[in-house]
Amino acid sequence: DVKVTQSSRYLVKRTGEKVFLECVQDMDHENMFWYRQDPGLGLRLIYFSYDVKMKEKGDIPEGYSVSREKKERFSLILESASTNQTSMYLCASSGQIGEQFFGPGTRLTVL
Amino acid sequence: GENVEQHPSTLSVQEGDSAVIKCTYSDSASNYFPWYKQELGKRPQLIIDIRSNVGEKKDQRIAVTLNKTAKHFSLHITETQPEDSAVYFCAASEVNTGFQKLVFGTGTRLLVSP
Image (cartoon, rainbow over the protein chains, first blue to last red):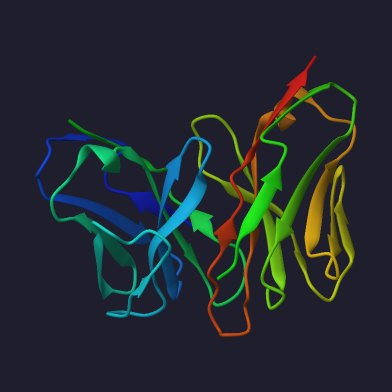
């Protein structure tokens, strides 16, 4: 069974704080993704990575950065959290072509 | 870039009825179309997918159809059951580049009443 885990299920931070969201997968997948999910907007891609140390901007990268130092780990960083970044964040991984496997999500609230 | 539109946003049916969710895409290069189901409080999971060299695919009570000319694809659920209640997302992707970047629709909340 593929496992994608995320470091926190719920997180509460203050405006201006630096926030790290961690994602780990155990299937040796090349591709990893960060999405945010908001009601009525579906799943929107923030960043993705197709190899270690490689990253590509998705559709809404502003205010976010990522890090992929090891194949199994993909981190999302909010350099200075803002209230409009309150959302559900979902990590996913996949092989070259095919199913994306999602993590359980982190519900982030920025006060 | 790719844009995926999904309709309806909510769908209520009686148990045993059929449900149809429709999506359109904009990029004619897209060739992979998965559907994900997200139950309340859970992660999205793939339920069925179709590639552009196929017009229809079935898996028990669910089927997906693809019309490449019109750039639309649909999810069909027959004999709906209360456990089919969830949010369904369609997506489109071009996979020829060796990796896959999905563009998702905005989701359809399906409610199946007993």
